[in-house]
Length: 459
Image (cartoon, rainbow, N blue to C red; front, side, top):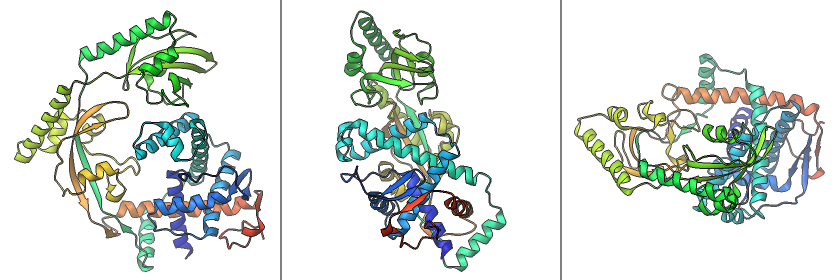
């Protein structure tokens, strides 16, 4: 029974670290404290939010009692508390990047570019309030993960341990079910702006720069002209303003220009993957600078988009007629480095392998490939990145496996991962048992009656 609890605990923690505890329209600011772990507190609402989070992410496959949920949260707080004691370093730049990704993800799910709609939907008072909460959650999540990584850094599993683990699951009737998975390859052709379109942007930025030098407000020019999606918000990027250091998650070209300027100086137009920029430095504070920037992305001629589409239509025709293979076409046509040098194969950034579980894929991508059989190819379709890059893509469904019970030979890598996870969780269990003894813990009388797996009550 303890073995099953440990597997479930690992799954729960993975879910927690991938999501944030925000319940739409039900956010509670002032709440009853039910547990104190070191310098961290657990609120009544944390338990309910945790329940919803686990149910949603596990699609109802994991159910927990209130006491089980409370213990999982207390374990996270214990890890977070000792991460601070152990001086686990968390990059402020990574936190900022995580916050931006979360906000972008929320905007995408609500299908809006209006940050205020995100603020209103999630029940925050303003954008700054939302960002503060996301920052708090991101920092705590990274502290927890950092402490776990430190605890499990030296842990590995041998082939014999993997085999023993699989047999224990098999004999106990606990072999996992793996969902339908696919592997994808792609050919990407970008629609690049012409030299004339790029020059128009450079001329526009030079004109803005001249206006500012003659007394116009860079702030207002940014609001009126910048293609940075944060320019009209209230957090970082509002009015083109950012406060950055050399670790901030900005592209290399951007930081090189920003840190080459003196206070009050305005850069010449320069190019990055996002488009063309100008920067004005407002204040230099040691290793940090306050600056504003304007980003303008060149328009793409419709003829260029049509050309990319027609090229991929011809490529697909040639593949179907057998005059070329998909891999040969990748070599000859693909313009995306990540896949061009990987024979077109797409890597799942969440898992690090090449498999995508159908039911957990991006809904838009799922709709394009769900009905395909192995070796079938989509029609060319338009796509666009957040950076404003426009392209057409052709997808090949390389392989497709149906839902099945775990098989030692076919699913060895997944079984190995589960065995490693179990061993890591055992290490965290032992660590927690030890740290609880020396950590200040206070539990309200109402919750002391819980039958915890660990000695939180210090009886």
